[in-house]
Length: 83
Image (cartoon, rainbow, N blue to C red; front, side, top):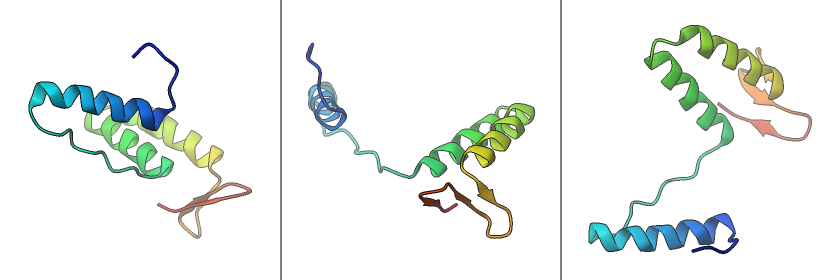
């Protein structure tokens, strides 16, 4: 490919290229929220018996995204992030 592309265009080209090898189209990944990705990361750490690392990361995420304990949701000054 060798050229600077936007993410969506690069992804489309990569999927087109990979589909040649598989003989079928590549499964399109559902886009999700940043919070969902962070929660998946925490789950993966716990699944690999890294509960201390998960606890540390979760604390940092809650600080950065302004976790509201009462409302049980993440927030920053401009946006609301739901669990």
